[in-house]
Length: 74
Image (cartoon, rainbow, N blue to C red; front, side):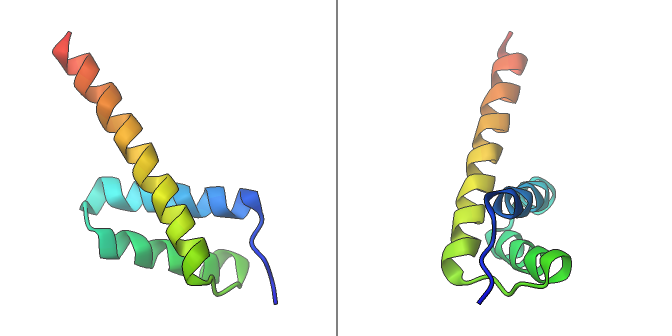
């Protein structure tokens, strides 16, 4: 069994963030995270790894969204 490293999970989260920014689709985001792991690392991630990367991607999205809203409010 292969385990994903923190760096790989962060890379998966970045992919998820970019997908969510372009699609705003939760299912597409989860799918892109899963596919990234398979394509780039040759590791089929378990549900926990996908959800962890997804949660981080959504957090990145909320942070970016809040920053943009503050900039627009000024």
